[in-house]
Length: 162
Image (cartoon, rainbow, N blue to C red; front, side, top):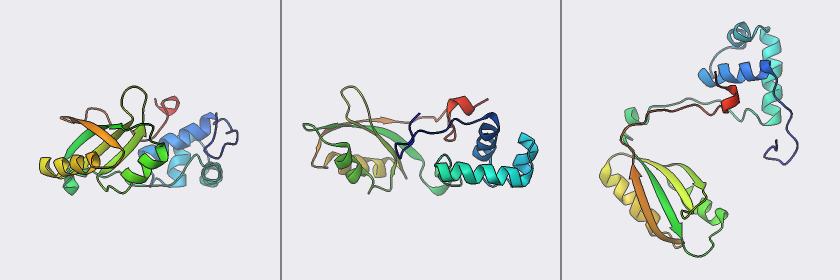
């Protein structure tokens, strides 16, 4: 398994996985609360979390918000088809400036870039699609609007899920 820095990543043991699972459910849980779940003392949990952070397994702690409650109720996936061979760095530099972009990934197949966006409404979404289509490297776009989000998981690898 490769780490983002290119070094060999250490395997996670069952206690680390339990700690990560607890943090993914509630990043505000105290070390004592997590320790009660994984049968460790609070100081032992803290040492393990510190090691997981130092290794880059835990990159930060955050809050999960409800986009609709914040006025971002329209969601779509936009496929970008690029001219020639556009580098991932060029694509990233362009789309990371859009506050509406939730995620962007290069993908296999005919599509070059898959972008997940959130917007206030359909008109706002239309403007985002128009701006993306106007990027110099974009040949065309295809959009799919989300009707219902059926499954949303925190960023926990499947091996850690119950």
